[in-house]
Image 1: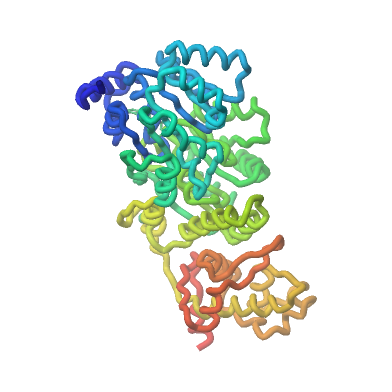
Image 2: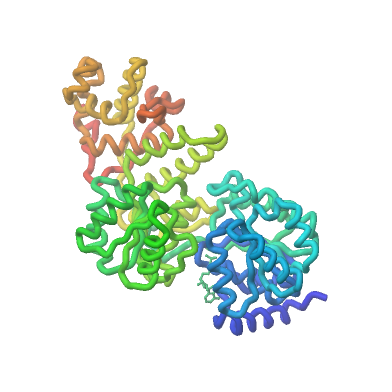
Length: 528
Ligand code: ADP
Ligand code: ZN
């Protein structure tokens, strides 16, 4: 007979205190644990650092049998199991990093009922022999960690996860708990349907991180901007700086170190020893700044990270949220700072065009990037937009850059028309491909060698855009891209019109743009 909720509650609390050494549950933990201990299915959405692990570890300890945890983070299994064993929890794992002997030992422990928790890589569950092994033991629950990996719409899809839908058919009486830190409304729905969790109770924690100040700045000289931020607001603080490429990780770490910041690089191209040493210094010492590719951070649990900076645009809002979420886990004020510029947009569109996979995959990547761009270009509260992306409503936070310094907007319709006309004119020269730089030179009436060479000084649009600066024009282009009024094509970052561009050119659509820090002179004031 299953225990009454009260008995389950006190047993769970006892386990929390005795085994894990914590006084009280956080947030939804208690409700989730009681529900699963009583045999119910659960879908848990909780931000990184929210305390998801205990939600399945405690039920696995309280219920008879072995808790089977499916996780894609193979590299972390050894650490997780070691940490549990240090607490006296009987844990083991099965994945491809082990040899046959090691595997056989864990299997024997499982069959003998000598394990509380068994961590499995998802591909194990595609193998019939693994399934038969599970049949021969007693399973207390299935925990599906990083459950968003089952969603094809998500940002981290793993085909192996699709096999997890079979768990329910094979073991209908074993409760399942699926956990994720990243779930938009769409992903959430997809997880529930793919894992056949229709009857599961949903536990959705707030994704708000009130102590994080979100700021997104136009990129001019990113390394200098970053140094300025560190010197003025984060002197001596620990932080993480994310860059897209290994080369920019190296350059940035070197630059910061030259300017007296205790900065260390971290990327997959470094040898394992250097990576481990740099990570250890970051974790153990005060005020170390790690400059890293996104590979850094999975499973890093450092409470006093005071800032997370992005020098390149993240590929999705999920990624941005997860990476910025590594700041301020101790609840103290922290900064999430992102520098982003036109080149980021052009570069990422090119990467999407050139990416492997089918059209549907590319469309997904493009939709993720569009959502990220919309967050960058919004004139609303960043936090409101961010939470809305995760399906959570909120009011202006008063603490992000757009709340503190409301973005001014201006009527960019005429400027947009000028830019789009120039794109249209150049598109007619079918053999030539031109990017934003050439078009801006034309609008500004600059007789550069490239302008003269292509007779672009003879175009009707030559010199019609002198009311804006180069920086302002680049802002116009970024926002046209973000609003879908312009697109990037091919290897050279060629700008092309979209269907919606026609509405602007035809005067049927107004374009509101957010001002660049230096305010643009109104087009109408000059030409009127
Ligand atoms: P997630 O998997 O959601 O990112 P973890 O399960 O790794 O989060 O938990 C994050 C940190 O919070 C860990 O250091 C964990 O030990 C700690 N933690 C979790 N629950 C509690 C609690 N009830 N009281 C104190 N610390 C907790
Ligand atoms: Zn705000």
